[in-house]
Image (cartoon, rainbow, N blue to C red):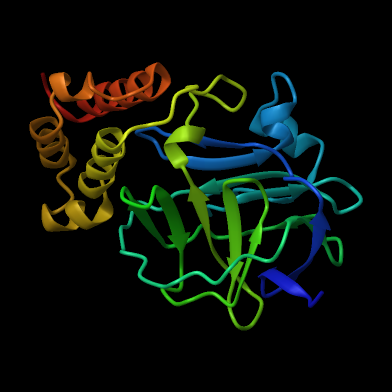
Length: 254
C-alpha cells in the first residue's frame, strides 16, 4: 500500500480490516455538526477531554481549529471527530469505487501533536442521502471505507482531501454514546435537513451582511413547527427542534 498523508508533515498507512473500524455517529446542532467514529462512541462516558488525555494526534490549538484524529501510543487509530464546514458548495465530482473492504489508519511515523484543518466546504445531498465535506471539488484518486457509512478520500498526491458520510440522518444521535432512531428517515425529513443547511450557512450570511437574525427568520418561515413535527424519528425531530430553539434564543429578540 502506498504512503498517504493527513497533512504535508503527517504520514499514514491505511490498514485493511475485515470489518468496519466502528459505528458512526452524526452530531447535529446550532454550534456545529460532526461526523464521529471510534472509541469516543464505544467507551461509556467518553468525552473529548478523556479521549485526548489517553491518545495522541490532532486537536484544536488556541484559536486554530482542527479536526480531531486521535491515535493510541502505538499509532493505531483511536477516534475520528470530523467537523462540518458552514460553507456550502455542490460536490459535483464522481467518487471512484472505494477500495475493497474496510480500513483503519496507522500513523507513520508517530506524530504526537499536529493540526488538521477541517475541510473547507460541505454538500448535503438530500436525494442521494450523502454528506460530503471537502477542500478540492475534484474527483478523488482513492476512497477508503473506515466504517459502513464513513469514507475518507485522497487526491492524486495521496493527500487527505475530504470525506463522505452516507445516510447521515440514520446515524444522527444527540450525544456521542446515545441512541439513534431505529426507523430510517424519509425523503421529506432529508429535504427539511437539506433546507436547514442551505439557509444556515456562510453563503446566506454573506448575502445578508452577516445578519444571522435574518437567516433564522428565513429558516422559521421555511420550516414552521407544523413541518418540523413531520420529521420522522423522535431523535431527529428532537435534535432539529432543539437546534432551532437555540438559534431563536441566541439571535431573535422574542
